[in-house]
Amino acid sequence: MIKLISRLLKTHFIGDPLRSKAAMIALTLFLAGCSHPQPDSDARPQAWLEPGTQVTLPAPGISPAFRSQQLLTGRFNGNTQSLLVMLNADSQKVTLAGLSSVGIRLFLVTYDDNGLHSEQSVIMPQLPPASQVLADVMLSRWPIDAWQPQLPKGWTLTDIGDKRELRNPRGKLVTEISYLNRHGQRLPIAIAQQVFKYHITIQYLGD
Image (cartoon, rainbow, N blue to C red; front, side):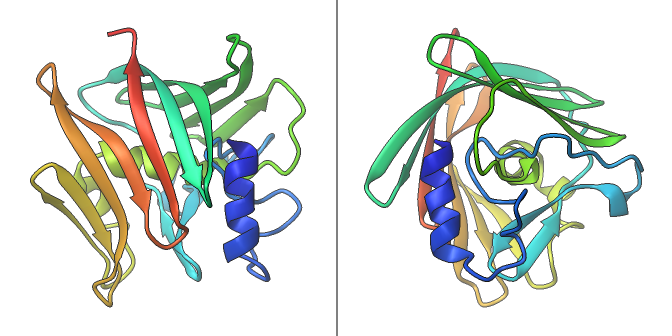
């Protein structure tokens, strides 16, 4: 999955400041050792919406709390790869752990009031910023009213039936999230990023 989205960044962000030695985009999106010690909004992580446009992520807390084990399958440029993820979120923090196919933890990302922190269990080259995967997670799970104050001017996030649409100021669809009502919850099952041209499907395990 890392190679999959790393190709995506190489294709779309040549010459962009995001492409530093320690910053590239991917599904497993974290940067080892990254942290932000201040709890104010200026210290919150940022993510790319499209080339040249970033967004500051909402505060990490969410209610009611949730936890899930997911199989994420990413598709880009004809290639498909999968990653097992453990996701936990409550009123104080979000944690995201990536596991190998045999259950070995590859990384752990934590986002709380003290900022964004990550732990890397194995050496993996060209690791991207954690804020990107958190952006997809939070864009799909956090309420729209948590996102509205964070969006750049002219951007809109709207729920329409079983879809959630993120559009830029020109009205172009940037991200479309599909949902399924399951056990009384509205759960994201697919994320289609129209600008960076990747698609992620989400399969819920163990329930």
